[in-house]
Image (cartoon, rainbow, N blue to C red; front, top):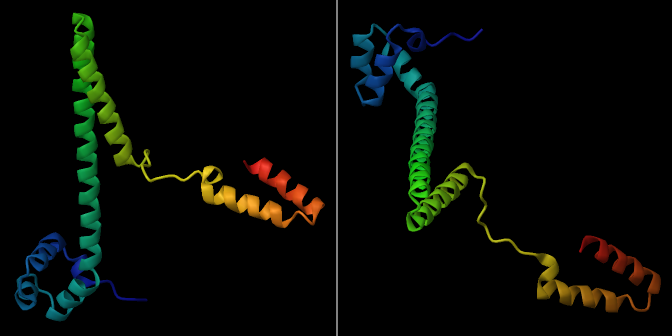
Length: 158
């Protein structure tokens, strides 16, 4: 059974990791926490990168949640302005608030991946497809049954 890392089991693991990330001397860290320099080195090489990756991922998630929280606050403020403008009968302000809400919803959809802005090609309307389809049908003129079968399939998928 593999041996458990003595640094990972240490009661002051967080302080050790912090010292390692700060670039402290392995020998000094080992002495300070009554560990062997070899154990500290092995921990730094084998465990610290995974911990740093997990910490970075957690920070990215936190930042994403902060952005979404800010968007929600902005949306709420814009909806309040819209409601107040409607109550006051201020059509110009209503349109501005509606535009702001629209842009906020669009931004939120982009951030969440709900809005795909990549260009989309409708193949059945492209000139290349129309040319290819005509060429295939002409090539099958000597074979009426095959030509009709192809035409039927093309009609189904159009």
